[in-house]
Image (cartoon, rainbow, N blue to C red; front, side, top):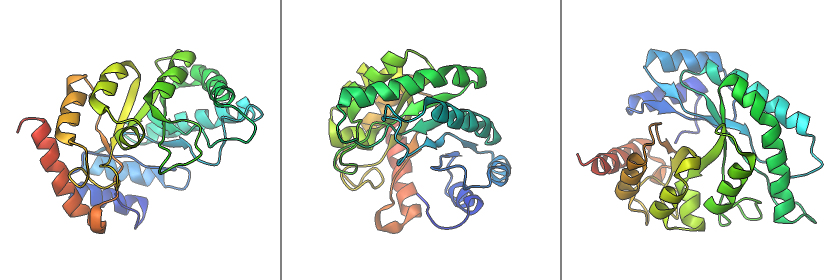
Length: 251
């Protein structure tokens, strides 16, 4: 929602518009202690951050498992600095020439399995994020079916999916039915309207009904508004979002 200003300044902007929580991408380039202080001052929490992003190809069988586990352990130690934060996103990686999808997914599974004892020891959850081929061409992980298959192969409640509804809509649609089918592996929910990746009410998704289904499934965490405000106007985007959220709650 915000790209300008320091980490703390962006927290202040979120607080001003009434958001109860924040999420962030990279964490090593931010003053987490200062951010935590700002969050506590406003009675806010942090939901998740990106622990392993693009350019770090864990789908490469030759990438050292130990390097991945070490970074996950660092993320586990960073997460509790931010109030309420106990999970972080893992990106599987872009396609690697000469490797099949099964080979790449197998490498992801191997590394996630190795990280499970660390996640369990710290009480953290890694959330793997399937993308979509329109915004992220030549990526190795698309859609709920492959994402669930990876989680099932890892076999831990500490490895689930970052269920980004924007990516799911662009790749496979059928949002409500797929949420129901994959509810066991939903570790976090993000959203933006499709196709423009703006706030709900600017595209093709009936988010009041989708949010209602998310509530029915028992999801209790804040939902992550990974939206680009239409017209670069966060206040208007927040106002639209609150209306959709109220409609989903029957208010």
